[in-house]
Every structure is written in C-alpha cells, then in structure tokens.
Picture (cartoon, rainbow, N blue to C red):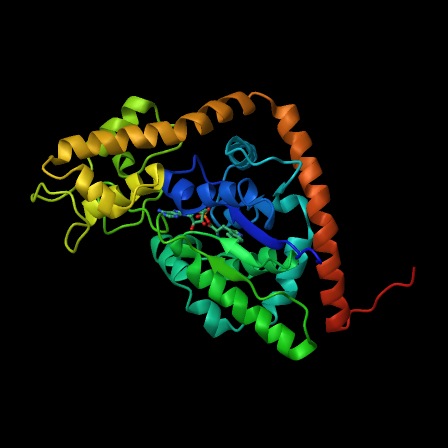
Length: 339
Ligand code: TYM
C-alpha cells in the first residue's frame, strides 16, 4: 500500500520576551506533541517570528538577544532541530517577498477588521505603523510558503488564520491551485489561558501586573505564590461553571498539565477548599515546566550550537520557501530569467 504523505505543520512565536504559561499550553505543548509523539504523521516547521516583532520599537540589542532566547526555548521544548525545521523568520527572505505579493491580494477593509490590529492601535496610538496593519499578511506568507496543512495556535490567532485562508482561496481562485488552504489546529484545552489576576483577560507577558502571568523562567516558589494569589470566587467549591472564570482557568491549567478531565478534577477536590486545589495546580505547573527550564538554562549558554541549528533550520526552510515563492511569482507573471 502506498504510504500516505505526511501533513505539514507550521507555527511561529514572536520573540517579545520570556514566553508565558499561556504560550506554553496554547501552542508550545502541542508543537512538541506534533513534532515528537506524532512524528509519523507530521512534518513540522517552527519559527521565531522576528520580522513580526518590529511593529513595536525595540532596541537592536534586545531584538537580537530575545530572538536567540526564543530560539533556545523552542529547542528546550524537546523539538529536535535535525528532524524538524526550526528557524528564524528573517533568515528566510522569501517570507517578506511573499508577504509583499499577498499584500496586493488583501483588501484594506478585511485587514482593518482584524481585532488584534484594532486593539494594538488603540493601545499604542503613537505608533500605528503600516507593518502593524499588514501583520496578518506576513503571517499568511509564513504559513502559505510551506503549504502547511495545520497551524497549531491559541485561540487569539484564529482570526489571522481565517484571513490566511481567505487570501489563499482568493489567489487560488485567480491563478489556479497555488497554495494549500491551511486549517487552524486549536486544542480546546489550553486554547485561551487567562490572566491569574483578571480571568476575563488573556494571560499575556505584556501585562503590567506580573502576578497575572507565569513566565516559563519563574522560580518554583514564585509559580506557587502566583497560583495561590490567583483571583477566584467565594463559593469554595471546585467545579467548572458559569461565573467561576478564575476556577475554570485554574482547572484548565491543571487539566493541561496532568491530563485529567474536568470530571476527574471535580471528584479529586470534592469536599476540599481552594487552598488545596491551588497548591495542586501550582505543583503540577512546576513539574510541567521543570524540564523546559533546565534545558533552556543549559542551551542558552551554548550560543554557537544555537546559531549552528538556526543556520541549518534556515537552509532547510529556504528549500521549501523558494519553491513556493518561485511558483507564485511565475503565476503572477514576473519575468523569469533564463538559466
Ligand atoms: P504570539 O507570539 O503572541 O504567541 C505564540 C503562540 O502562543 C499562543 N498564546 C496563547 N495561547 C493560549 N492562551 C494564551 N494566553 C496565549 N497567549 C499566546 C498564541 O495563540 C500563539 O499560538 N502572530 C503570532 C506569531 C506568528 C504565527 C505565524 C503563528 C507569526 N507568524 C504563523 C502561526 C503561524 C503571534 O504573535 O503569536
């Protein structure tokens, strides 16, 4: 029987500081599962999206450092850079080239409707740059260049996946089949981890209150303290339900870290108070993050190795990216040089 072709998985993360438990549970954990446990099914491409992060003004030294740090986190997850393509976006110029072309197949109106653009431009009215506006188009280029089947992301990226699909379908409709139309891969559990201090808000590293988020490098005692001070409700009964956003969030975190279902968690803490529950959640998070933290601390001291892996990753990524860019340019009608 002919072997079925592996599906292509692509995702990326911005190098905007130490990732949070939200990034980890919403994205990284699934990236790792797809690359390792499901390696028979998927070919994985994971990128540090450094081009995306300059929509905000950064010191050049910070951008360089944060990019390398985020790259180290991806390897620290246990993603093998020889079996998967782990690369830095700016090392593969085809991303920017395809993004320009796709800009011309994206309507001003549809880009204006992106909620992340609206939120970010409201928060930073002093720097509403064109890059921020066309950010989802660059993201579409990241995905379409590799003909990705699945894009594992958190819930907040869903709208960007929808516009990517629209752009791909529009282009294919004009020029014939050029891009694979990708599917978002959003695991219900962990898709939207909320702030520990305001469970109506997404957990984010840009939160002014550091008690709202857990960073992947937080010390064990800090993790425990943050979970213990998480905002909950006054009912003192552990179950998933309406009006219990804080507890729902902690249940989700606990479920992602232990693999237990909500029913199992409810019976485990039946008759117990929030204190016991929070301690268990804190310990589960500590156990989950421990190996990543240790491996990160080892890797970040080996810059030569990280750069060598990034160079290999860029080379492997370019191979695929060039193929799609060439095909796209030919379809649009750019004059090809004779070889
Ligand atoms: P970024 O860097 O903001 O986040 C990386 C991944 O983490 C997920 N995430 C969360 N998931 C659950 N709960 C949370 N609180 C939480 N916070 C973040 C995000 O959904 C994301 O999957 N634009 C993207 C990066 C990007 C990209 C791409 C993604 C660039 N090109 C191509 C996929 C495909 C971003 O800013 O993610």
